[in-house]
Image (cartoon, rainbow, N blue to C red; front, side, top):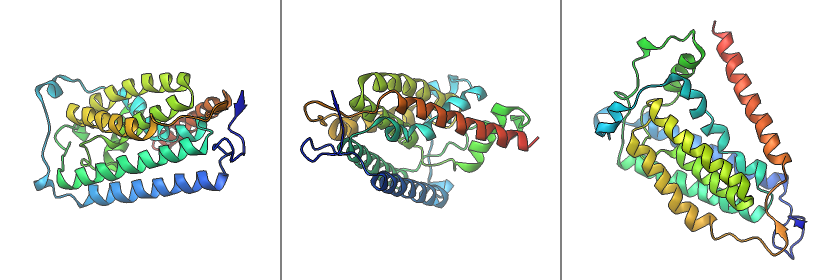
Length: 249
């Protein structure tokens, strides 16, 4: 079977490194600028809570922070598994759409998790998990919750991986289901935040990613080397976090 090689005939030319770097850099700048600009400019008096009775019954599990933190590198999974530039561009468009939609929601319907989060006084920052939770709470403002943008992006990454290779997508969707639990047990999101993030991503994924079809005889995803490289990248990220933790002791 042919791979997605440089050819205008199959409409799936080998993606240029500059294009990948450009798309990734642009999305990161868009996300960081928009996310923190909105989050840091919210007036606490205007924000509301979306707690339902089940939220109070969900326990706080500090150890789940390590699952939650996988949301951030997971956004980059398409870079490691998607070979076809057409699919990569669709993925970038879906990411941009979900970021833009979420930012509008954050501005017109601000939600806060200030009371949902566990008090800093009960976190023992000498323990790795508590330290990581404290770091998350200090970096991420308690706003920008509805819908859960991080979860939405992870779901879109799973859609993209699914179109690249069914096996990659299946593994990603299983991982996303575990992450969806972590956003609630880490007390970072209300249940409605998580559900709305999944629904938003499902709509955009259905509209922008599922219609993608590779040309006949073309493999849109990378071989096993892509996922293996991502796992190595993930290990590097977590090793960096652990070293940062050790430096605080």
